[in-house]
Image (tube, rainbow, N blue to C red; front, side, top):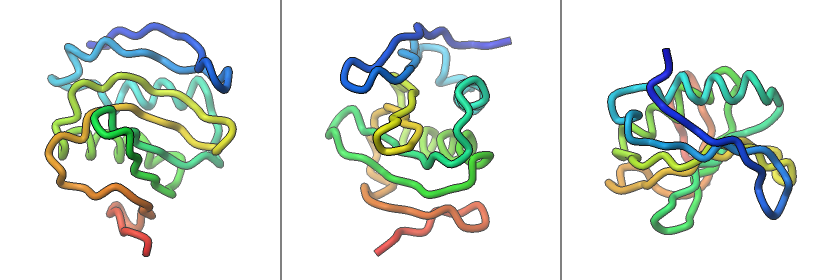
Length: 124
């Protein structure tokens, strides 16, 4: 059972699919399941992950394995108290999944990361 709602739409610039999310229930769980559902429906195993901060418009770019994406999004969401999670989508120009949330606590720096053994290592 899902504890979130979304509206499927397209990105006005790229025409790529995205889900605009009603985040009110995600604070009690459901981020990982939402992301899993999206990436399974729109499967691009070669894509990386981009977390878009809706407060600053900056990003966290993460190179990772396809099956790590839901866990990483959930971890960052919890670490940063990412409410509201506003959208999840694909960007076919940059070959990535993109997730919009607020990076409110500042526990993770913006920039480039690589997932290694379940941890995010910042690229220099």
